[in-house]
Image (tube, rainbow, N blue to C red; front, top):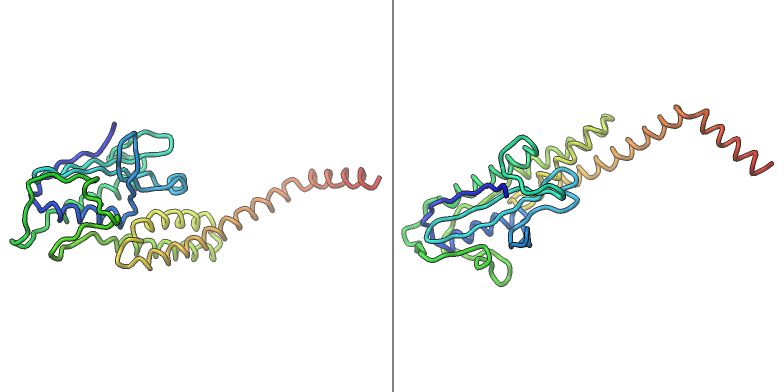
Length: 241
């Protein structure tokens, strides 16, 4: 089992740790599922995994002020993959940076009145009855994926623009990357940017795919004109003869 594993001494209140982690999971579209016969938070769908992204798997526990994190990538056929290496580097780097940012947020200073718990909290007990984040009695800095939303908007706009310049393959590629950043950006304070980028990407990709299919059909027709004409002539003679 190849996983990114890290133990971080926080000595922070349990409610605060639960709040930030559940806020991160919600904004990044993680859901609690069964992975390898064990409960884990998983992000991704079959469609997204087939296009560009790998499953993201996340587990955590918090005991006596120490946070234990385990994270990895997974595919439809591959086993678990850690967050270092060249293959699927984009998913690895993006996920690793997200976790580093999460740890930085968990280490932010809190008011002196905030109680520090000495018990233990895990990802199952941190879930509330209405599947929302636990509340903390003071304001804290949380994860904001505005940068991902902005990148999704730029890539989606690029996808639809390059289509008009008759570059269908580039439109498809930028559209696929838009979907990658949309999944993170839709949970940010500027989710409308990510949504706008996704709409542009869908328009650009769909038109680019239609153009690509049309180009191949026209090319095939001209390259096999004599053969197709011969089939048509034989069918005409058979039908009317």
